Length: 280
Image (spheres, helix red, strand yellow):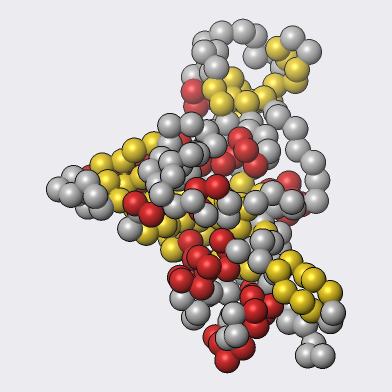
């Protein structure tokens, strides 16, 4: 829509009642994926690829592009949706750094072994959550829309059961739960940070600055994909002695020092990296 609002307004029942969508990220993400899938399918067809959906919910990636002429050529695509925390930042996880990421010839929890893919990409969707922006909680509301030409019930009775039903003239009158979309495509390694993306789980975290995400300006973007792979394969596994103590390596500075490559410090994109320790 020209206003920047999401065109999806809610769920409709057989009586043409509209139920607004919760801002729960899982619900929003799934509907966004359904909404955008036909465009991805058209892109794949026009590019000479077929699509394979992940067999199970926890499988990586969401979609596999397989070349129709040469099925050895495969690309992984994960759909990543998140809302803006403010005008400049957002973030998400980029998949596991354990399991299939380390054992690249295995097919556990992955559609094809990791090393069978020619590239790993993310389609990012960043949006503004209406309730987050307005600092208020929202609940599911119920609407009757005059343009749907309701033919049942009494217009004098604004309730169904114990629920109040709001009557509006047009669908566009219903405020969307999200708006102001940014779409971008990026190689996974180019938007990665050197931090986990979700607490103690083995997930790679993305950088957070929206412009850096859109411009593929991640921590490893100047170092190269090989350093991204090696760092995350060894994340929290490799150790070094720091100030007389054995320390697990969980930042890019320690890792490059551990590898004897302090000369590469200047190639680290610092804006997305953990804060560099002061030299002893």
